[in-house]
Length: 218
Image (cartoon, one colour):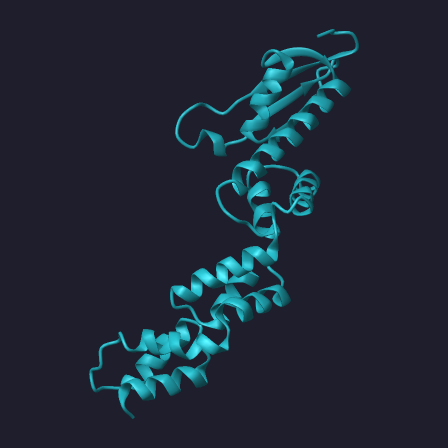
């Protein structure tokens, strides 16, 4: 590339080996006056930038260098989104956290996740229904499922609707009874012990004690 009005661009990729992809690459824009602007970018972006520049140490106009960094960042974020959603379902907030944790800037993350939502690749309601169905089958109670969905960034309204659809009150008692019946009875504080277990699984206290009394024969 032309060195006219140039800055020197240096890209330092993380050393290869275990965990290398999780470590950032360092991009240094060195001005003619010796000033240095340093940027930390995801390793994937650093590799793209080296490919675009044709090397890891190249003379390049500063504005052009920033354009290439931006382009590589957007392309890397797009590939990261496609890779993640190709493996399993994500809600929008969870996907955003994944990209931010990988080192992508907030504005790029918001744009890429927004596009994924618009394209139907990411759907909070679909994600919540799948999560609720899976956790209900694993013996989780309603409140725990809703709480975990909210912790993952699903809105309370969407989480509640998903639980209504996939793990509603109609099957809540049966799930609690099934779990409680597997607990051994010792004859000592069985009701309290089983109820505590069910509450820890996310079942409402009233239901937990009712089921515990039934199983313990009180």
